[in-house]
Image 1 (tube, rainbow, N blue to C red):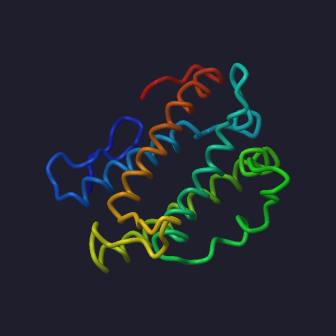
Image 2: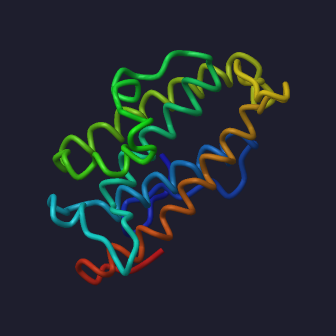
Length: 179
């Protein structure tokens, strides 16, 4: 069992193999987002700061999409979940962010948790099928293909970036501060 901090987040291992270290840091970032979104009602998940339209609910929905995008679509070459195919991307390229305001806190948390669970399974499958060097099933238009290692690092970067936003929004709601 991993050590957990005072917010219940799993501490990344101090001395482990590369895959365990990367997954440890990704789980820590995921847990940070969960902490920042915890115990908030719909009003809290829809709160914005300054002139930004970013919300914690929007982050949950966006990161649920990002999990599916990288771990299902790119890594395994699978179709996206139906929800991601029903949005009107042409009319509103940011519909994920905007439509989150129509979802309940329970729906947003469940959507994100289900995407994270799928990603964990898909990453484990890829680790068993080539390790961190395993190339994604899809390539960029120029033919380059990211590895599982690149995808995991990108997910860590995506969470870390949005967790900075989450810190500011959560503090503006109820004063909760910390990493």
